[in-house]
Image 1 (cartoon, rainbow, N blue to C red):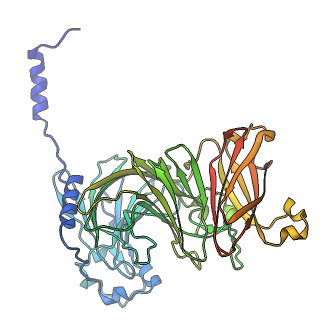
Image 2 (tube, rainbow, N blue to C red):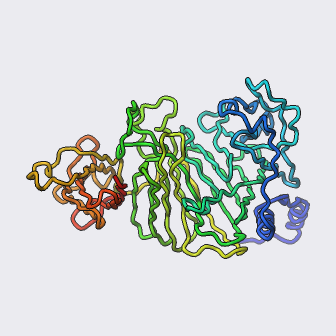
Length: 513
């Protein structure tokens, strides 16, 4: 091979030297230093600046305050992303700072009341509110058709955010951090108090957002890389600093709603067969096992957990995509996203904790899931973790073999009903569990058998499997009797073909009666 001479290289070197190196004006390290500085200082509550006229708005009055689409940030600049902002008021009293990051500058995005329409709220005087600040923001990008920029991400309230992929509608949410969830002492809600958003280049497929988190006992730096598409993907990097020890530290928390479903019918007449944003908790263990825990709406607070080492993922999933399962034209529960947490690197030992809270209707988010490390950080010790967050519909995460599509609970006729009356003194509960997946398509039905387990408060008095000729899957039927009706029963079941496990593990908590 002939090498170029020094004379030939000289013009090229001169050209390269003449090209300026573009340095970012702001990045993750700067947010980390702010978080570190915050953690070394006493916590300061946000300054209350919300006028009474906004604080006292009814829910419907607040909803009438809308950002004008024609005023969207970056509108008219030929950029693929646009920003719109939320007005403070009602439940969102604390302002957040929002900044735009360019190649060499960081510019505050200041509150502008003229960018909003106030609907029928004639009593409001927006001309007095030039320093209020925004309550949050949302990101727009064309995912459903190229001529319209859809809302794909919203950051609003505490450290909450939610997102959408193609053909989805808002459902489950995520948070930056959860502290002392479901403890009698009360939960602490960290909040994002400042954001920095990188101005995208024309044709950009990603958007970078930095956030500063603060609360009485924690401060943190976050970097989000948004990747819109069929699934919206968020690459998240976080470094947190505790001001003092916490009892429960929840990483990558997810929040959702379960009112009723196939495994727990409505307690009152309702034309809808199911009402929930998420159907169950799915866990991909580091051992390779997949676990499925159907959600419930308990009568009392229900907290359960799954001990894990280096989990491969967990999520609150909406597997049932049939409109007929919900019959809800407005809410479209069939289009709510499944949200999957995929850890990056080894997260060590800990547990996935699931919190389920009683709810009288579907207006409350009553389900929380998060990762709790066995060894939380010491105060002011940096603790960094990374994960990928996927908002899914068309291609949800599930095991490659077979998975649970539905769990039904009731009192259908089974072989146990034919037993003498003396054998049926105590009531029992029947579960029918439908499995689907490629492992079940060709399996020999004669080789199929259920593997089941119940804790000391439960007795499985019948278990059987049969081919589901409608779906091509397999239905497992369990009849369970409880020793003490005032205590829960934990159940586990999966499918075997011979000695091989061919399904995920169905894991269920039957709450006290």
